[in-house]
Image (tube, rainbow, N blue to C red; front, top):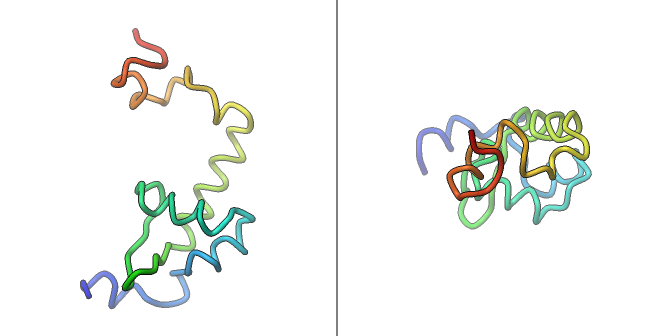
Length: 89
């Protein structure tokens, strides 16, 4: 185990199932967020542990975006511009 995993385990870290119950997302979606690095997460064996505040911050961000979260033309989607999609100036 890395030092981060050893010192990080506590009440601020949740299993994907606990994070799913907290946010209303599915456990599979929380695992996908962890794999992509969208939330702070660590592997514990074959399981993912996600940081409680990171998953709640992600949920707040998505709620604030509303339907615009699906808009590939959003100004903050520089990753899409690199792929040749989205707003290029």
